[in-house]
Image (cartoon, rainbow, N blue to C red):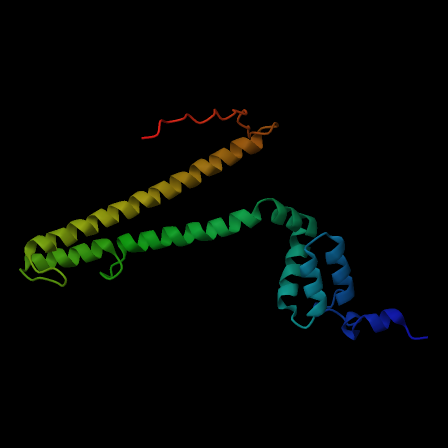
Length: 193
């Protein structure tokens, strides 16, 4: 009688993992028993030859412990990592739009370019008069001020958010409160015109 388990599973289950610490079958069992995503465990089983992501994941799990990784993933890292990336990209872009020395990118450099041209009596496209040159300069300063204001707003939102989270985590009771139920009043009937 043939070995049913050997026939049911491909031969790479019995091969050693590229890291040399455990077989792919053992890694599959560990991932499944850790209640991690079933997709990740199946992916580790189906594609054992693509070990680069597996190796990174296993190295992180060994360094910090699988329970800590699962706790991070289920608690806050899923929200914090993308939000941090958006924060970094937004602040970098706003900083570049204000202070970059290239007039095609930075508002202040563009305003300086138009200011120098108007001091020499030249007109830069699309301006065709000195009033339009002044308007472009004014618009660049307004845009730079707004970008700076948005940077300050973003940083203050981050600071207040962190402060709120720290306060909420310091309390033993839940900090969220549900608004009391208020029934809707029946709509008023307006006379037809």
